[in-house]
Length: 194
Image 1 (cartoon, helix red, strand yellow):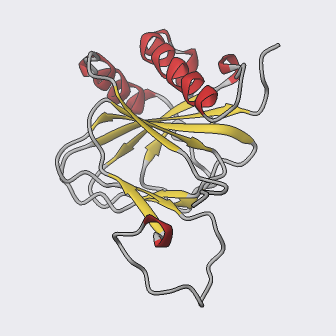
Image 2 (cartoon, rainbow, N blue to C red):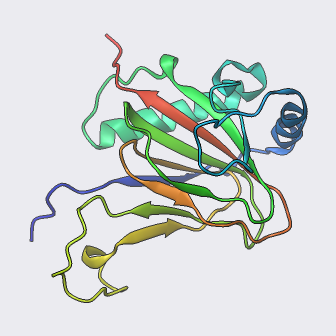
């Protein structure tokens, strides 16, 4: 069998990272930074998309460097060399009970990443949609066969990074837990370093 045109997603744990200080910093930012995501359908999730780039915040420097290294590693694994991580942008997302994020992608970028900074048991999952067009003639969905999957979800876990190609549609289901869910999101543009 040949697996043509696969859709790679990489999941990496950051086992040595303590996010306590960054969690506090994100909460402080949510009190003083204007909320972003003005073009999003859901307006409840606090985010700093287009209002505050966490890639320029020194408090995120160590984590951002680790994430950049992981994205470069992923890029090499799937055949992209010399990704320029100096032009990436990042923002934070703070979900409260019943918050969600609709299906979307990050076209006009090469890679995107989500870092789970503060997650509790029962936190909302991130779903990815099969990029192939819907076909009513396909056989019945079989959960044990990845060739028939229509969606795939990642169970969130503290200090875990997901990297994927930016055109892959994804969403966050409704957050049913009473605790706050904090994620960091990143886009890496198409440019490559020389």
